[in-house]
Structures are given as structure tokens and as C-alpha cells.
Length: 443
Image (cartoon, rainbow, N blue to C red; front, side, top):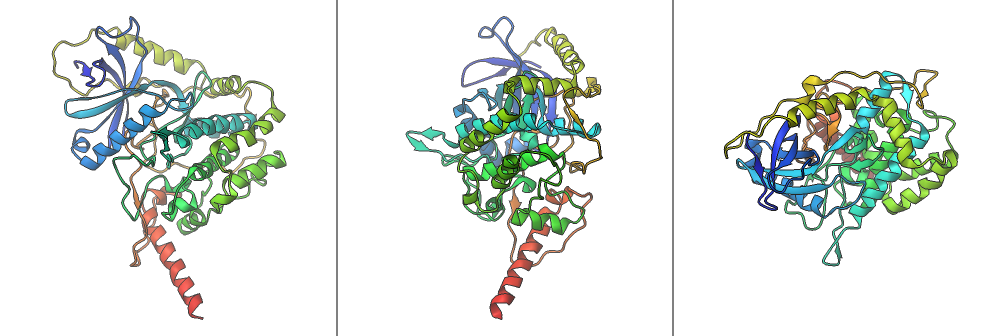
């Protein structure tokens, strides 16, 4: 396949295996080669746009925005970018390769066994993620705040490594003052299901917007169900619009009252009623965690990950990658974007029950994922969200409601309205609300 060459650092890379492919880009596992490489350089995650997408100026600018922002982010709870370049007319970004699984994958494992996330694990994950987000929120350039907001937080963008680390992924949808790409008026970026009300309405965003999304993630970790799961698509969108998050006490009884209060504050519809920053949130959750366990967070998360996936997954991964690295580098200066898929070698690993709370009475589960949200990476070597969530660009924008009524189309499943007809249903909802308010004013 030849070697990629970075125009920024002059370093060279080769692709070893394909990890994921979405509608906009691809993610590969690769390694550094050539004179600048270490004797045994660490494996890397290499992301790129698809050929036709790379020709789109707006998509290219979004990719560049993510690379520029990621280059400024330097925190142990954020996936780290190491290089950037271009090959065969396609830009590529080089990130640290994460060995683990995103939280959506962890939840799926637990649901298969009707198990729950221990409260101390849920708290540890959110505390770690909040610390990484605070770093992004307070980032400055030339002494001025960049006002970064992630805008696309969800369980699939929070990654748990085998070593017990939590990493925030995918800043491709992030807002910041120095972005090349400006969000057009009337467009909303992110996953509708995890948006704060102000984001759905196209209003001003802040760190409190990401606090809301973290609150939904914590709620989901504690319940193993999606916050707005419903077979009624109108009800779903209505609940999202007004942030009507179901009360946690009936779904996960027996938790400390202070934890119920913290979650309720995180998902408050009014941003001013939430925690003022991700740092304030982390500090508020820390004593709740210490009241449950004195174990270090890293140990808790390492143990939890091992109980979810076992050691066989890692052993198979390492064996296959060692085999691929042993192959000689192809000669020639041309480069082709192809690599064998590691997914072909995936095997399901049984979950064991140690350190995982088994549900005595069946609980409402998280529900099926949208059809476009399937996991192509069961080996868990990732640096981006799972499935067809685009690994290199933001989630496709959802238009804000038009003035004219739009028909409502029946969704394919209980959660697909967000991706298939969410925009249409949302438009109908807002128009209905507007008409109702005008009628009330008329009286």
C-alpha cells in the first residue's frame, strides 16, 4: 500500500487494518515507518475523508476544524492528535490508538446480561469526562477564550480504555470562535436525542450545554435505557424539546438523594439552573463517589472493563496486529487506501458477572439503536464513535423547523425518528406549538 507522508512533520505511516467506515470518512489502524520512527512505534488511529467527500469544501473545512482544535487539546481525558497530512488527495489525521470500547458498547454488553452499571463506575466515568471537557471549555488563543462547546456528547463519544481511562472523542461538531466552518442559520449540529433545549432551539450555547448532555449520559449509565425511549415519535420529540427527562428515582431506586438531585440539576431545562461548568460538576460528584468507594477511579474502571469484555478480546487483537505489522512495507511511491478488516476476526466474548450488579427484576432496557448506529468494530480498537456515525466529520446537521407544515412519516423503529424523520417531526411539533400560542394570544 505504500506509505502516507505528513507535510507537517515529514513522518511516514502505513495502514495495517480498517477499523470503521461511515458516510463521510474512514478510520484505520496504522504505524509510523521510516527514519523518524521508533524501533517499535506505537500503533495509531488514522482518519481520513472518503474520496468524494474530500472534494467538498465544506466537509474538508470541518475536517480541518477538528484537526486544528484537537491539536490544541492536551488533556488525559481527551483523545490526542499527533499529526496531520494529506495522501492521494485525501487529508488524514493521526490520533493515539485507543484500546477499549465506547460506553454505548459497554451498555450493550450489560443489557445482554440484564446487568447494571455500578453507581461508582457511572460516577467515575462522568467525573473523568467532565475534567476533559472543562479543559476544552476553558481553552484560550492569544489570551482570549475560544468558547469551545463539544455539541455532540453521547455514550458513543465517551470511551473507556482497557487501562481504566476515560477519553472524550469526536470534536468534529464542536463550536469555537476560530472555526473555519460557520454553522448556517437554521441548522443544528449534533445528535437530537442528547441535545439540550437551547441547542434544539438554535439558541446560544455554553459549557452548560455539554453539562446537560453529560447528565443524559449519567442517567443512561444508571438506568441502561435511553432517556427518551418511546414508541410514540411525537412524544419523543416533544420530550426532547422541553427536556422532559424521566425521573430517575423509580428507574434506579436506592441511590443517594444527593445523586438524584445532581442528575436533576444536570438535565434542568433552564441552563442557569445547571452546574455552571464541567469542573463544578466534577467537584460536586466527587464526594458522592467517595461515599460509595475509596478505590481509585482508574482501578474501578479497569476492573469494570475487564468484567465487561474479558481478556480474550485483547489477546486476539494483539495477535492479529502483530501478524500485520510483521508484513514488509510495500515498495513504490503510490498509495492506495485499502487494508484488511480486523472486524473479520472478531469473536464474541462472554460477559462475566463479577463486580457487576445483576438486575433481580427485569428493568426497562436501553432499546434498539437506530439502523444507522451499528457497531462495525467489535474488537474495540477505536478513536471515534461507533457505527455509521461519521468518524471524521460531525453528525449531519438537522434543519430547524420551516414555516410551512410538513407531513409526519412513520419511523422504522422506536428510536429512528432522530435520524430518519426527526427533522420532519420536530418541524411539525414546533409549528403546532406556535399555532397554539398564537391562538392563546388571540383570546
